[in-house]
Image (cartoon, rainbow, N blue to C red):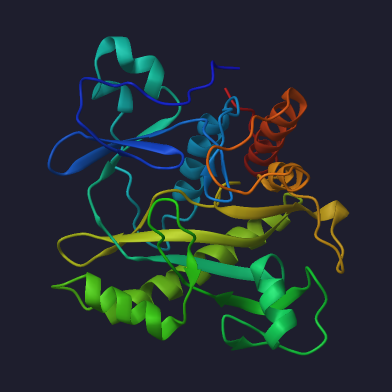
Length: 305
């Protein structure tokens, strides 16, 4: 197990920003270096304790899916070794946890696909009989599989805020307004179709490996020629809800391979879900790290190096 990385400290490249999990550096005018840390966020708050190997798991799993689903849509990868763009004494910080990617213009939406009634979708369905305005059959139980996957976009939140579910028409309007020079409405439709195709193929594959992908979030970006690309991460425990098929049944919230275990622990605390986040007990950290690794190994059939 590698030493957990909470924050990278690369000096050979300009730092552009730090997200909840990823640190972004400029390589040149056409490329970025994205370093995936071991930070964990819950309820949009970065927790003070890193999860060992989390960044390496996320990077390896995203690379697996980028390769497997590359026939559906182009992705952000350049094929450049991250160790080749940093100083020699910085290579340990990027080894196994970084990507050199194309600089693309992100779409201003989160492309969420749901295959099961769970989470905020379950609450919405209980209240309205629909999820994000999409009418569903009556009588569905919690965690029920939907007749077909549905696309439920969300607005991208500013730092510290929550993503907000929006309609597809609103997603098209956001893309049209925030992507001058492009046909934003057409790009939103293309993102919707690509997201459903990506989810459907990944869910079929994962089911054969004993994992149900309940829902997932994709991000897309566009190059100067207007070609849509899959960016950020893909089908990881941070961006998806993974359930073990052998313990799934309707009517309950199934156990998961994602950070739901941490969320469930945090719900037992007297904490207002605002920064600073509480420290995690050692057993919660260890269990979470094991869940991330198990998801990777089940899906890929490989052991994390």
